[in-house]
Every structure is written in C-alpha cells, then in structure tokens.
Length: 477
Image 1 (cartoon, helix red, strand yellow):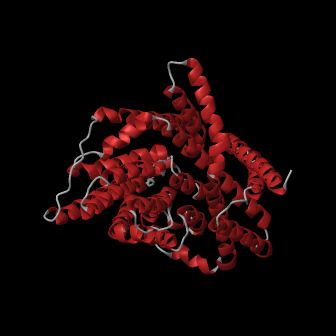
Image 2 (cartoon, helix red, strand yellow):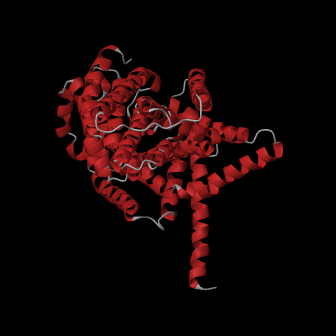
Image 3 (cartoon, helix red, strand yellow):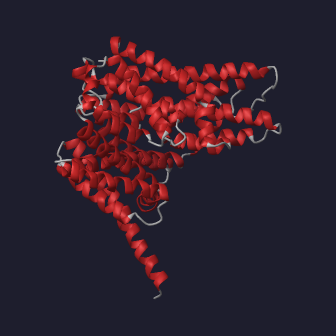
C-alpha cells in the first residue's frame, strides 16, 4: 500500500469520525436545552474540540484564520483572565448551540430541496408582471427564508437570473436582474428581524438575559414590515425614473395562486407547532425549533413519497443517511465559521471587559435610546470590516448595559439587535446573502452591498432608529 492510498484511507476515517460527532452534539444540546441540565452541553463542548481537530484538512485560508484567531484569544485569556477555563467552556458551549441550530435548519432545507412544489412556488413568484414582481419576490424571499434560510436566495435568485437571461437588450437585462435579486434579498433580510427559525432571534435571545421571542415578536415583525415597504418604495421610484427610457418585458406565468398553497401550509403548520409547544412547555422558541424542525423535516420527506410504504421508508432512510454521512461533512466550512464566530465573539468580549471594564462604565450613564440606536448602526459598521453578525452579537451583546440599568425592557435590546442584524445582512460584503446576490448579479460583493443597497441601508437604518424609540416606549414588554 503506497503513501497516497494510506493517506486517503486515514482521511476517510477522520471524515467519518468528524461527521458522526455532530449528530451526538445535536442530541446533547437539544437534551440540555429541554432538560435544563448543564452536563450534556459540557460533553458537546469537548466533542466540538475533537470535531475542529479532525476538520483541519482541506480548509481555505479564511477558515484557518478563524481557528488561528480563536487559539490566539485562548492563549491571551490564559494570561489575562483569572477564570479563563470557565470562560472558554462557556464559549465552546455557545458554539455547540450555534452549530446545532444551524444543522437543525439544514434538515428543513434538505426536505425542501426534494420537494417539487417548492420549486413551482418559486417559479410562480418570479414570473409575475412588472408591477407585482418586486412584491411577490420580496414576499417569496421572506416566506422561503423561513423554510430554506439562505437557500431561498439561491432558489429565487437563480430563477430571477435565469428569467432575465432571455432578454437580449443588455441594459434591460441588467436592470431587471438587479431589481429581482434585490427584491429577494431584501425580503430575506427582513425575515431575519422576527423569525424564530433564524440565527438572529436564536442568538440574541441567548445572549441577552430575561428575553423571549414572544416579548419582542410584535416589534420585530413591524421592523420587517418597515424594511419590506422601504424596499418596494425604492424599487417603485427607480422604475418610474426608467419607465420613460426602457419598457421592461413581462414574464408569462403558467401557474395560479394555488401554487402557493404548499408554501403557506408548511409556513403555517411549522410555526403553529412551534407556538403551541411554546405555550405548552413554557420553553423559549429556540429549543423547540431545534427539536421540532428535524422531526418535521423527516415527516415532510416521508410525505413526498406517500402512497408506496416501501418506497417511503427507504427514501426517507436514504435522505437521513445522506444528511448524516454527506451533507454534514459538506457543511464543514460553514460549521467552522459559525463555531469559531461564536467562540471568538465571547472570548473577545470577555477580554475587552477585563481590559477595559472600568473605561466602559460610561455606557451605564448614556440614555437608553442612544444605546439602542447605536446598536443598529454599530453592527453594520462591524460588517464592513469582516465581522459577521454572529460574531458581532456575541462580542457586543455582553458589553451592553443591562436592561435594568437602562430602565427598559430586555426585549427592546432584541429589537435593536435584530434590526442591526438585518441592516448588516443587506450591506456587508462579507455576509452570505450579499455574496450570493453578487454572484447571481455578476457584480462584486462590495458593489452589491454598498452601491446597490447603499440608500436602502441608510434610510432603513434611520427608519429603524426612529422605530426602536417608539417600540421601546409604547410596545415592547
């Protein structure tokens, strides 16, 4: 046996071990979230260390940099933090939480990917007339975002790009492509303001004490509504300026509104189950999502093969095996970024608090409105220097004065953080949504983030700044 073959076999074994670790991590985290017992989380923290150790091969430089920064912060904490070990364990447990939530949502994406009705829904939304197309695609990006997460941008964005490619006039093609892609992206980021099936809600409610999705839901939904209306208004103004110059062609849709029934059914039943269990168990939305979504996904895959019991069983089993043995490994790059973003954010926040704790005390004296508005703007600024929203929230969140000190509801901080998260998602050239839109639109991420969405970011930030003051005063509980 030559060296190359030996290496391939050993690499295959390491891949198998690393991949199989993640289902155990998921089980432990879900068990801990539901039972309130800390021990499974500690076990998961050590499993994550093993997973990272076994996943070093075939990593891009950017992923390796995340690991290097994490190790550097760990070494710094050993010398600077008296309780460095407990802080490190806490950072690792938060990392396992993020990884588990991500994989839970990927289960739903897996089920949706094999559903022909989802593609039909997306195609119908993308083929509407010009005066309705922005709103339907924005609605689609919003609804599909709940089910598919970033997969909604890939699905609807690809359909939009494909539709515009049939136009011979290059200027007209670019305008139509840009309008459709922005509708999808803006609908998607608006969804991150409120949906319990997003990292924004999951992470912010875990970072800020005494918060709940229920308490912030109404204000967060209105934040999303503001962004959707803003996007439509900007698109309308843009189209009016171009109307005299270019007449955009309409698509011919072969479907009817009945095509949307499966999307509405999945949306209503999934969220309905989550809400019912929240009332029944008195748990937060996140642990319920972690348990319900994988089970719901398996049931959805089984339903797609209804009518043939044998086929239903083997097809469902094949999908589950494929997810565990292939998909989890293929998500390695994303998992490492998510795990290390949470770890770096918590370790960095702890070090800042230790080194600059006294100098940060001035924040306690600032008016609550100033702090809430600052959150909305600081997060997008962090996004411009490469910090994804997960890292930013884990780093900023612990430094925010407590709600009791500010004299406000803790849920007001959630509304501000999710608003900042959405603005970051639309403007940062380093977020997944901007990277996907830039690739589909054939422009650079910086152009898509700052040129295409510059005015949306500024006006959206200003509107949400006004809204957070109103919500904090009259709505949030």
